[in-house]
Image (cartoon, rainbow, N blue to C red; front, side, top):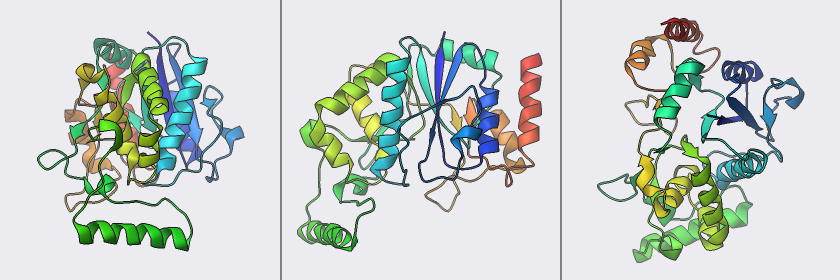
Amino acid sequence: MKQVFLICAHKDIDQLNALVAALCDPDFTVYVHLDRKSALDPAALHPSARQVAPRIDVRWGGFSQVNATLVSLRQILHEQPEFDKVIFLSAQDFPLLPNALLKRELMRLKDRELLETAPIRPGGWNVGFRYQFFYREGGGRLERLACGLANRVLRASGRRRSMPDGFVPHGGSSWWALSRDCLAEVLRLADAYPRLMRFMRTVQCPDEMLFQTLVMHSRFAGRVLSDNFRYVQWPEQGARNPKVLDAGDFERIRASNAHFCRKLDSQASAGLLPVLVQWKESRAAA
């Protein structure tokens, strides 16, 4: 069964190409979105990868992350009439399963949407502030001042914003594996609810909210398995970014049921990468 991998990348062409090379398989198609502001040379991209166009200038925490994903998905669905899932990756992911085993695992999960999700509320994922207040991506000084003033008014009045059109907020990891039919429904809903999409332009980290909210609003909600099969380690002190993995993380990675681990850096993870490669090769030979 055909699978599509969508990789978003903003640095380190060698690491990106190594990931594309690892996913070279007759049953896999790989798309890459290159951040428009990055120094990555499109001409240096692995020849088996398909480039997403247009390229979006991606800013952390803003709607540009969602926009880059939506642009990529529209191209994929236009060009690929038949496939099982899109597996969404960053260029700092590493595949822990050899391709034959990864294909078997994805076949086992073919009737599920692999989407880490929880309701955004006290007792669920308590990050309501991300959408209850205004967040501005970029803009000039006056726009930032207006955003800050609006938030001060909300706090002083005790009021909070809510999602439009009856949508119930859900959130989770921005990395997922969703079926073609589910993604077609996500794009349909995005087009059908322009007010929600405008609202999402004013929230913090909409990439960790929009897809969960739309899928859980759709007929695919019952297919969701709240597990994206990624190994990620968050610093105990709390941080906005996950830990860059190193050799000391290997045993925990090996004990997981993850299909991919992240995030890796070609320099900071230099001691871990050859160990992962050797372990992966041993799994292929088993």
